Image (tube, rainbow over all chains, first blue to last red; front, side, top):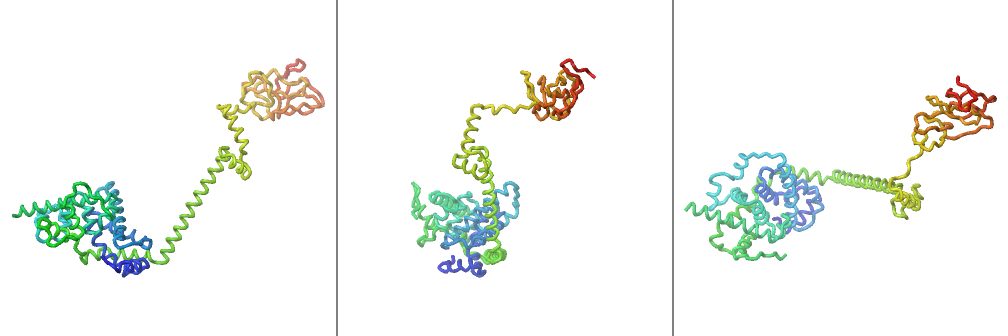
Length: 185
Length: 244
C-alpha cells in the first residue's frame, strides 16, 4: 500500500506523470495478477492488461482513497474477466499442461510442502482449489486487502454473504492443512 | 460500516476475520498457525517480476491517454458522436411527429400547430375524418372509375372506357349519328352496358349537332350532318344512318 502519499501520487499520475503511474502500478499489479491467476489462470495476463488499459483511460475521472482505488480497479478487472470468460465459453480452449505447471494445481505434492514454508505460488494454488466464490472472497480480503464492504461491492454480494464465503473458504483451507499435517505425521 | 453478522457465528469466525484483517493477537492459537502462514504467503509483497510484468505496455497506454492530442481527439470524437446521436434522434422525432400530424392523431393543439406550420389537417378536419372512418369502418367507398366500375343501373357514363378517346374496338349498334351531339364511343372493357361521351368524362353538346363521334370523344362541329355512323364505324341506331 502506498499510504499517505497516495493522493498526491494519484493526482500526478492522472496529470500524466509516468513515474507516479508506475508507482501505482507496481503497488497494485502483483495483487491484481494473483487474483486473476486464481480466478482464471489462462486469461489472467490478457484480462490484467485490459483492466489497466481501461483504468488508464478513465484515471482522470477517479477520485477517492487508496482502498477505493483498489476496489475500483478490481471491479474493472472482474468485469473484464467476466467478459473474457463469456467469450472463452463460446470458443473454449484449455491449455491444461501449462496451467498445471504454473499454478502447481494437479501436482502430486502441491499440498504436501505447504505446512512449514509456503511459497506464494503454492499458497495461491491452494486457494485456487477452493470453490470459485470462496476463493474470490479470500483473495479480495487477504491478498488485495479490501474490507468486507469493499469486497461486497466488487463481488456484487451482500457483506454478510462475503463474510460467510470467506469464512467457509478459510475453514476449508485450515481443514486441508490439518489433513496434510496428520498425513505427514 | 457495520457488517451484518449471520446467526450462529462462532468465536472461530471472529478469529478468522481477525486473521484476514491482520489483527490477530500474537501468539496465534496453534490450530490457526498454518492457515496464518498460508495467508501471509499469499499476500506477500509482489516480486520484482510481478511488479514489472506488463508495466511497459501500461506506461505506453498511460502516456497515450495523457497526451494532449489524444485527449483532445477523444474529446472531439466524443463531442461529434454526441452531436450525431442527437441529430439522428431529432430527425426521427420530427419525422414521427410529422407523420402523426398528417395522420391526424396528434392532440388538438399540436394538430392545429402542425396545420399552421406544415399544412397538416387541422384538428377539426382530423376529428371529422376520424368520425367518418368510425361510421364507415370498411373505409371510404371506392372511387368511381368509368373504366372499371360496374354500372348495373345502366347509367350512362361519359367517356371512352380506355380513356384514350379512341373508338371502342367492339362494334355496337348504339352508334351516334342521331344528331344529338353526343358522341358515343362504346366501352367494351367495362361491365357497364353503355358508357357514353368523351374520354375526359364531360359531355359537350355543341351548337352544331354532329352525328359522328370523334376519336377523342369531343364532338366537333360539322357543317353538314351525316347519317353515317360515328367514328367507330358501326352505324347508328336511329335508323336514318347506314352502315358502311
